Amino acid sequence: MTDAVASDLGADTRKPARFLYISAVVLLCAWVIVPIYFLLINTLSSPETVTSFPKPFIPEFDLGSLTFFAGFAGILTALKNSVVVAGLTMIMSIAIGAPAGYALSRFDFPGKGLFRLLILLTRAFPLPLLALPLAVLFIRTGLDDTAFGLALVHTTLAIPFAVLITFSLFSGIPIELEEAAWTLGCTRLTAFTKVVLPLILPGITASAIFAFVISWNEVFAAAVLTIENRTLTAFLLQNLDTSPLHLKFAGGFILVVPALIFIFAVRKYLFAMWGIANR
Amino acid sequence: MAEIQIKNVAKSFGAYQALHDINLTIADQEFMVLLGASGCGKSTLLRIIAGLETATAGEVWIGGRRIDHLSPKDRGIAMVFQNYAVFPHLTVFENIGFGLRMQKLPNDEVTRRVERVATLMHIEQLLKRYSGELSGGQRQRVAVARALAMEPDVILMDEPLSNLDALLRMEMRAELKGVLAESKTTAIYVTHDQVEAMSMADRISVMHQGRIVQAASPIEVYRNPSAEFVASFIGNPPMNFLKATPAGDGKWSVAGQVMDGPRADRPHLQFAIRPEDIQPAEQGLTATAKVVEPLGAHLLVTCEVDGSLFRAVLDSDMVVRPGETLTLAPQADRVRWFDPETTKAVA
Ligand SMILES: Nc1ncnc2c1ncn2[C@@H]1O[C@H](COP(=O)(O)OP(=O)(O)O)[C@@H](O)[C@H]1O
Ligand SMILES: [Mg+2]
Image (cartoon, rainbow over all chains, first blue to last red; front, side, top):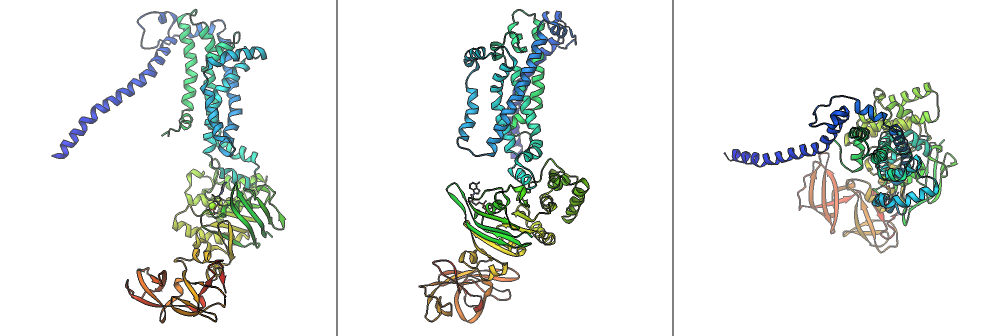
């Protein structure tokens, strides 16, 4: 008798909580998915449908908008610029970030804690604050309006993440594995290439992709520091008021999709970086 | 020939001195165990020999060659780590063959040597697996096989069995001893487990606070501990100590009982006897039984003698009740004496 009452009570209190929980999940998912879904529909609709109302809920799989997008003057160059800048950013942030992550995890040196803090502090300065001095500096040194110059700025944005991700990767590899390799005939370098590198390669790839995405999505520095060699984000921003609606949708879609795919591919390492246990 | 000589080795970590002036010679093919409590510097000494740590002072020689300036790979050593350190991205075969591949040995030679040590360590059916698919005991076998495959002059082991469960540890202990004796390698084996040390060693170096207190055969360390620390550290239950005062002419008074002792001019000495070297007798130390533990093979009686704790291992047929007064006689030739000032043994 008391059992039945207790379980009834339990169900009563649990039901609203469960309802709230599920609605919250649905709401959050919708928050993210609905805009992306509309983006998808509009991208895959003919330019006429995009401007019409009401909108269909099922994409028509018309490639008109995308074709128009591809044909729009300068857009392919902008796309190419984006890829080049993001690629350079990826290479530079790993080339600089991974050794820093390794040093942080393997060596004790004075100021190590401060160094880690400083790495994070690089994110404390808003880019708009830095943009003007940077632009002046770049014009003086001739780096303005070059893919390399922009990649440098993007690298500074990506490096904290590259360092933190690789730091946690290297820390996850017991030093004994390297020591064992040393006693088995390796130098520090061969132990690194034969033991450490194969173990962290997936993680390095992930943090490289993450750097790529950071650069790919960055718009402010790109808009300020380039004129002729605009990246896709800067190009779309510049033409926002003049370009037709379907071009904006197609452009937005082209921007979002690679970022989404990449982030999904590296989600495990992002969780690891933020200390959230995955699975 | 791989005799190891450690000459005046010292090691400091900043202000903390982990090793003080270590001198030790280990004969070719000897099985030397470094025994001591956690934190006494065993691993540090082993890692200095391996080249994973640099000594602050002193020299290390292997086979008549000074090696303390060489990197680990050039010292002719192989090491087995406590946490196995089996490479997770390689198969068991490639793990065991890793060092051989680094030496650029031909493929068939690598295969021959890997298969030989794998058979020796009974892991020949695991060669295609990855370390994630192995149990702790199997990983330990891989780690030992990998070291043996190098055919090193010296094999160094840092608590290799301490992560295994008790039964497996006992099994591996005997097996490892056999395999190493057969391989004719000089071995240094670090452990904090005195049973492991006693059962495996040719010689034990007992370490305490960064010093080697005694280096001798297991039975010598057990029977003739050179210092009070060794006497109390080795043996379970540990040795009994009682205060002795001089009674003139090489006689000492222990708990009111006069005994023959060393002719030493000291205000007092420590009398020491192992619990199993005590028999009930007509004449002897007066003991009050406190706790009686029948352990099957024998009877462990914890008593009080002259206000001190005193343990006796007696015949399991004896009947002793707590509170009972016993008269216990130490076996005369097993009694040892220590100087409380220097803590060293006095003959
Ligand atoms: N890298 C290090 N830095 C500072 N202190 C250390 C380091 N390695 C060991 N120690 C200290 O040296 C002492 C001996 O350590 P260790 O040789 O590992 O002891 P054992 O192996 O006997 O347990 C310990 O007190 C330990 O804290
Ligand atoms: Mg240790």
